[in-house]
Length: 228
Image 1 (cartoon, rainbow, N blue to C red):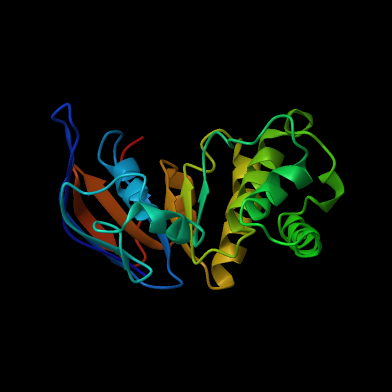
Image 2: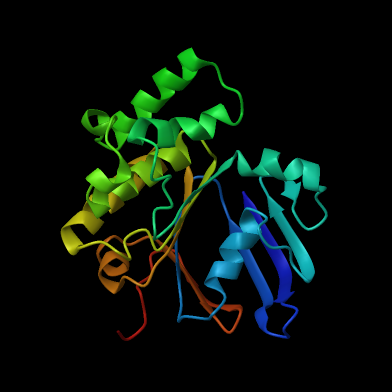
């Protein structure tokens, strides 16, 4: 599903974010990506959905080489990857339904199919009764669930969650983790960048630790491994 070999990324200011990174992730895995701030985690995830390109090395995602991919093919890749952000990134003037539907409207899905699919994913994240609410009428946890619904409405093969619980209280964080687990159980590959020791140590999954732009630890049922 994801195969990176000998990946380097140096930015124009001279900062090297990735320094010979090698990672292979199989379909259906749930992977925590951990490491100190500035270790290269964000650059690693951005390479997957082609927001960044490597300076050297090969990045293959869903049988597509993103290193050499033509720009016109990038949307095709991104339709198969959902991204959930720490800060939700919802459109403030659109309702919950409209925020989720927007992802299908841009690919010109039919109105009938949009309605059916949007209500399916709102059921999945337990927000059907909030479909007509605006984002500022929701709690932080509810906004994150809308963000997840929007990310999975296209039935992506990969879901990237970048600190999805970073702005949430502990109880709400566990609700989000339960939803991510359900999505993974349905066959979606989930990558979650996180600084939450409690989540990683309580719900053991594969752990990839990145430091100084390299994988320093890769354990199938690992722990967080860093001091708070």
